[in-house]
Amino acid sequence: MEKSELEHVENIKEAPIMFKIVSIENSSPHWHYEYEVFFVLKGSVIINCEAGSFDLGKGDMLLINSQEIHSIIPSETGNLCLFMQWSPALLLDVYESRFCFNLKTVGEKQIPPEKASLFRNVLVQIGLLLHEKPDGYQFTVKSWFYGFIGLLFSDTHYTVSKPDKTNTAGKHLEDFDKIQQYIREHFKEELTIDRLCSEVAMSRAKVFRILKMSGADSVKKNQKFYQVEYAKNLLVHSDLSIPWIAEESGFESESSFYRVFKEMTGLPPKRYRVFPGEKTVLLGVQGYAAYQQAEAVKLLKEFCLPVIMLLRAARDSQVGFIPEVLHPAGSPDFGTVPPTRE
Figure 1 (spheres, rainbow, N blue to C red):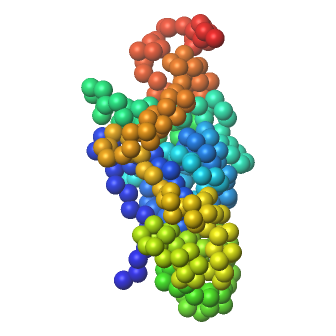
Figure 2 (figure 1 turned 90 degrees about the horizontal axis):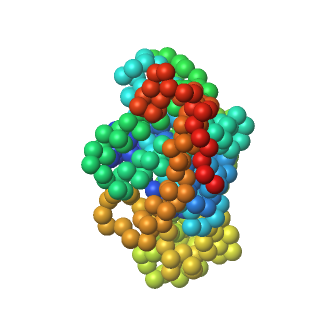
Figure 3 (figure 1 turned 135 degrees about the horizontal axis):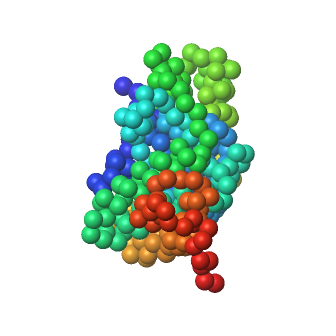
């Protein structure tokens, strides 16, 4: 049975979302049914998706839509990113339609800064609640999450389509999985576009189109993800020499191995062996280093909006999920709220 490039997602117990903060190295091209929003707390990463290639720095956000192929490469070491995922079934419970949201703070058609602040604040509040766990926090986490969904409708551009009865998207992802499966099983070998097309029984145009959508516009570029992942495992879990690992991982030379490995992980192989990568910080979950969690919380608080600023952003955004207790009927307009102190 083929192993799919589908990424499986497990929700937290407090809400119908997957939520984590992680220092990421690289993620090979993949897809999942869930929507996924990235929020960079520290450092920078490059996210390749069907909409293009985006270099995200501190404070930037990008939403990956359901079933959208994407991959991630760090621009520098020491990044820290917040991820939140949720099922499109939550929207289907209300609308019998598929939605594609445009939420990003980089590239063309990015959302205005005041609207971006609202989205960031929701993610921050969820993160801090999962860390601090005050009484009743489970309900507040849910309210912030559903507020986030409301913001997507009120403050982003989106397209609407009916459910795909012909399963066109499914066939497209099937073809992607087939290509990825072959590359994954033969990444140590010399792969060419002609060989790949022959083995997966697809035209060059079709293969190139699918590779481009995954952010890897060549067979070699796609192959690198699996070569580096294999090399990382050998570096951490063996005492094998670096030249041997380079050859075993399918690289033509030791110099090309050093160059590609640093490009994909942000670290040269020798340093990676001493300081191996991906460090996960799941807020509220035991078993992670205290200094990592403390750093994540500190970064979250940097993006936390004061209440007055949140109200003003809500007014400018015309969003409707701010509780009525903050602006009851007949109360003054938000513009009359005194300015914050310097």
